[in-house]
Length: 444
Ligand code: GLU
Image (tube, rainbow, N blue to C red):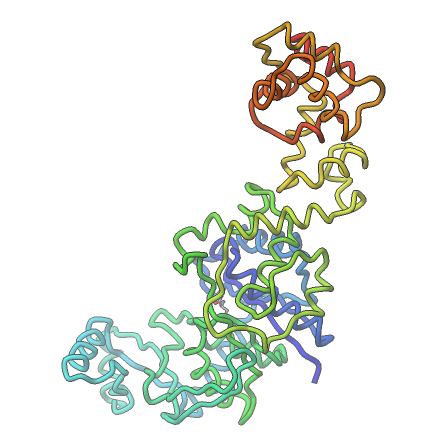
């Protein structure tokens, strides 16, 4: 059977590194297996879902290079969910419950006090038709629960290996709320069945859902109808802390627009953290497809380290050919790129190099005599990577200065600031005329 997977974000916010890791794993898996990658927009929550967030998700995925073969919205599929609901009611899997939140709370408290797990007691299954009618007459609306088998559910997880859940320790899940709205559980299964999804790859936070969902798959589509399941351990920060607190800063939007990271830096990192493979810069998704191996995924949380992302981004840029970035360099040429490439961490650093080269730079000159001496001793002819060394050596001999005293006035004159790029790289990129003018204190 041809593999078909889906990434199913809810358009209630921006996608962040945690979502991207799941999208990436699905995408890589689909490509590796010659399968199909579906983008499903989980927008059944009509109040919290927005078109703007949906559009942003699409932009983010395309920017990352994770395009989809098919896409659909859950909000367009309520008829299918209604049909599934009716079928589950007919077959006795879905039953109406009338307890209020308070009543359920009270039940759980009593169970806990008795040392029992707070599992729903299925009192609603005992309701007679007359009792149900009485509740309805009072104006109560039912919520609907799925009747679990009470048995042991087993599956071979693509990531976790042999897995099982005793459904007797889980409450019958509510699939439909009092107001008729669907929780995520049922629509997801209906879609997976109707779209022909073969593999569900998602975060470990869905493991408990999986028990119920396997039984819903079977109730709707027969024994063995569940797709293969794979659950990735969660992503945590470098310190092992949950990422949720700083997740805003880890949205694709922030990493792209504010931080200026390269998509392949983000993907190279997310493909390998939490696996036994080393994290290495990769310039193409094809390499990550070839390297994907779910057997190498560790059972412990994957650590996302922002510092590691920075280092990886630098290494990726250092290996990026001019042609691949030319259209993002604002007209700068290949010689410029080759010279500065080893010295930048993000592509946005290029702007600062450009400014130091093209100006305007307001030179800082404290000792005009020293600057004049420097102008006099500037090596003849075209400046290259060796010029800085030759120049400062000559100045050292002529003035007896060394260290900071020797270098800093030159940096201050040529860049107007005490810190910045390596001078031996920068010097040959600045036109000779400009160097001489800056040494005279002219803003150019
Ligand atoms: N919308 C769900 C989520 O974002 C999808 C989970 C799933 O992949 O089944 O958690």
